[in-house]
Image 1 (cartoon, one colour):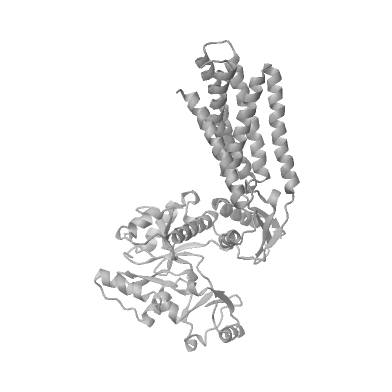
Image 2 (spheres, rainbow, N blue to C red):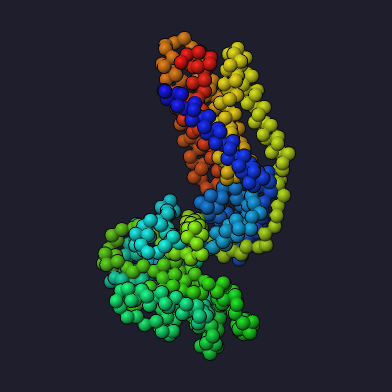
Length: 536
């Protein structure tokens, strides 16, 4: 069996798989493909900025949100500015779970910082955006017993950032490096006593494993959290919620000072805080539960604390404490709890993707607030989708008829129809498993045009009388592969541009070209060889 025959069988298998996947999706979900906002409508989320911004800042915010969306594989998210203090985000779905995950991704301000002994060692501006990656396996090597809920996100620090980190960590061997994402600022945290002590048994077990004795008393653990939130000119005081006398006399720094409290807090406490000028922010009780780990310098440190944005707190390794930058690749990690291993893996994947998306997007220049979501109708609707599909079919038929007249051969028409339809089926089944919007539809049509152009080249070369059949096929594919490679290279900048409006077009065009270059063109060449030239 030669390589042309292998390709034609592979082509047939992929077409069958594409049809089967669309059929299964239709049977289980009522739709063969997922459609974008243009065709099926979706959900609109208003984003309110804390203050009006100029055009350049608004452009940066819109680009940031687009980057977060695209890195989260949400290529269908549409983002547009409305005036100077509002942005509209539109999603191609009304699924509560999906929309909630998107809201969590987009609502984060995205400020990353690593703090050592109350000083900032690294910020998000010191990270290479392109270096942010999945570091779960690296985290697993350092936490072999962490379980299926472990996640890790790696990044590379710029040379300037590495030098700043080295200077901050000088003579700080084994000091904790507190890594925060959206650490509260101008805030006070009131932690429930039960939350403060919830993870003490796990900490005591860890001490027993290490053969050491640690203090896990209430005041000591409160001091641990107070130390965690130390930062030059922006300490975040921490008090036990039930000890009202301890924070009875504190006053807000300004009218924007926040107090973070659990969502089950007493209304009397909220009223008292608001009457004193604080802005009260309720968070889920679980966010207030810190996890701890032993530390050689402090005895005990907070390792994760959701309400504070603390992701983890590894110790400064001795080679980083000499004041010289010796490396610039690091990672943050964490563990999520769930009732089953499968659910833990899923939640860890979501957490990892959330943090990667936020870090890739970078920090927003202003604070944002998400408004109430609304359902939006499809601007183009089902009829437009029908017209688009009909247009694709008419284009294939028209081109095939033209080619048939050119070569005066019904067999060539059949070959072109089979090759083009098969390629469209493979492409639509794959793109449709994510979302097909107007840009993706345009890319599918563009891919058909590239496909037909290549098939004309193959037909011309194979029907010529110059050389034997192998030489003619070789000449044809030298041209086809060159033009295909140019098309793919042209699309690469568009895919990585971060412009979600054109990612669908670029993805469809590139994928269609690659399918043609490595599968369907070869299948078409085998068809011409066997059924038109009648050669084995």
